[in-house]
Length: 436
Ligand code: GLY
Image (cartoon, rainbow, N blue to C red; front, side, top):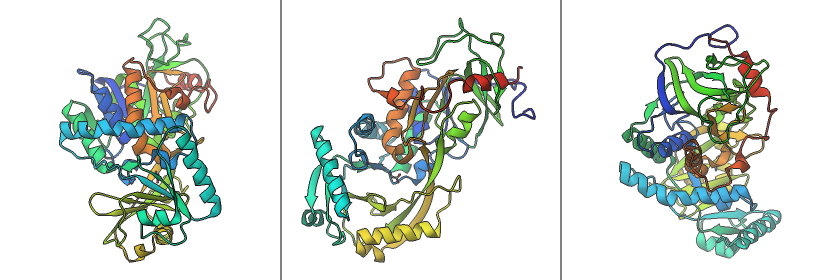
């Protein structure tokens, strides 16, 4: 790498794939899973650590499309479709890998502790019923019939029978196992150190869906490796990634790097404002709180009863950079919130406690699809609180875009086009890349 962070020369013997996926969490693994449905497609997944050990590992696995999404709009549609996909994905993964991902249609109960929240929840339920969704308002006594351990301070709630949860760790294991069976190269501890790019050729290889054709200020075919610079000039094509172990070249590269996605995109001059938001989760055992359903209290905590008898209580939401550790303060906050929700939880045994970094975006919505200014590059990132819910569908959408198949879903509502930074930044980054 040169002093300005740019690779001067590609290493010899680069491996070549049809698609390289950067990030081995739920989104990246799902992308590879759907890409590899097409026989003969050579796919690689790279992760800076171990597969599925980032935000995916930390997730409580909620499929709370209706519970967490208050307004009807593209995001609700996305969330509902993401939830529905699990009805096919769970049995498909079990058949292919033998792994049960623990899908439970437990329902979710969102409760109110204040009059204001009670009114808001009633509106939330009414809005969803307008769209023929099942959202049942329950008065306080009905809430306690459903969940007797909840505190007397609960003033009512909405029950969403269609919501549920999965075991996110088993899900990642199942996706990785399916990918491995299909011959996907799964490369752990393989950090991307830069991008391999070339100027876009107007008469060059077929444009990827969503990419833009553009003239070039550079000689056709002049490849370079870009590791983080800026400058001025034209659009380009991403043809691979650089790692300490060498370059991997591919017709399509997918950026699915969770909280790290913004840093990687910045090397290409792409404004992808994703930042880590820490979530801490505690696993409780010996819980004298009979619960069949998820209980969710906005802004304080949620409880997810898992099939193995544990009750997960989550999650904090802490803006603390890339510091990914469970803290005493977080545990205390969760303990207070859980006990306020269900007082008998004070006696529960703390079995485990962990943290993860949710990838939060500047506007709170995920980012999906081709990256403007960079042919061959796609993004699937920024799923914030909904990575498990939306990860498989996001992966499927990006896979179908790469495969040039129609996508019967309004992914453009989450596209990068015109969403964040200036459109000329990718061209500036390309100009700064060193010629080979
Ligand atoms: N969706 C729950 C969370 O991110 O904590």
